[in-house]
Image 1 (spheres, rainbow, N blue to C red):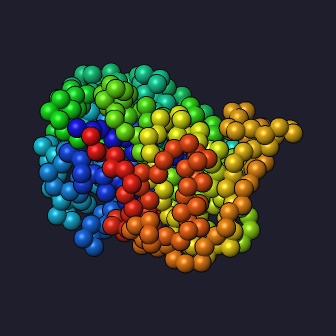
Image 2: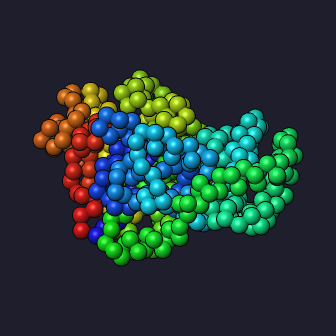
Image 3: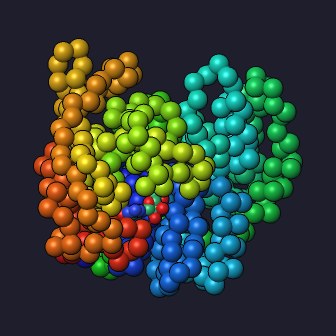
Length: 430
Ligand code: GDP
């Protein structure tokens, strides 16, 4: 029996989709534990494309239990539409195969409106949110005014919760020039959607602990990346939840001791979407080339990603904050054909060399990467399924990455195809 947490170890888009799919085939239970429907996973199974935002990757495979944990914020209308779309593709979804934690906070329409209204305020530095109301829903959770799944079951409680939320939101909306919320219409639409959501509602913490005792393999599927973590990321250019592996415990109600393996997903170079510090960012032909070869455009937003060399300082840091046991190194093939490759080993700041990213924003903006240059390779690594198929320089690159981040490679991905993976350590192995 083994339980595995998958986390992105950079700024997201590390290629979690492929690895999560690969692992979810081996799991009995697949859980989401943070984030919202801003996660964009595209799964290709037997040539068919499935697009998932809020649903765990396990849903498209039969015989698995899919779980949405309390650490997630859930847009009930989006979820119902996502379920309908997946069902149309022939996937069966029922209360036997999908469970939503009763204590999951809901994203309501006013959260998205607030998100977009704030982002439109020219005077405030943009955070680069997806505008789906995820941040404002987390704010309401902490502010103790969010509506949770369980509240949908009782009209009196629901009205009480809505009243409490509206006091806050209507004041805020007045300041932003938005109309007050129509309480009756909101309650009516919540009552309408309630049965659709409540059929999946369960005390997830209890079910997961039972599953664990029964020897089931549980996969905790992270979204985004550790450098976007609300506490340990490049604040304020971060997401609104904890992303690091510890969140798998608090975001589902399983104890931290139940986690046997943390797999960090790491891209062989670095990308970032939106604003915020990025020490190894490239503005030259090399950066352009990484973006083109790596097809670095967002799946949800379509935004072009910023690209740069591999930053070992950052990944060393995220491996520690998430307690990563092994990494899956992805998109090595994107580096094919570069004459030389650079890896950032430290940061220069005010005459000193740092081995970590400082917290202060002005320092994060001022650090200069210290690079080590490695020889590139001409041969293609695309589709390699064994070390023997890799050129010596590519193996050297991977070994150096391992050394610098202080963490071994468990899996190596060499193309978008799930079989094009070199397995070193099976995270689910006992
Ligand atoms: P996520 O946001 O971390 O889930 O990242 P995605 O799953 O969206 O992955 C980003 C893109 O990288 C997808 O289009 C994948 O098909 C692609 N991808 C994943 N692994 C590899 C790889 O090893 N090589 C290449 N060339 N593409 C990959």
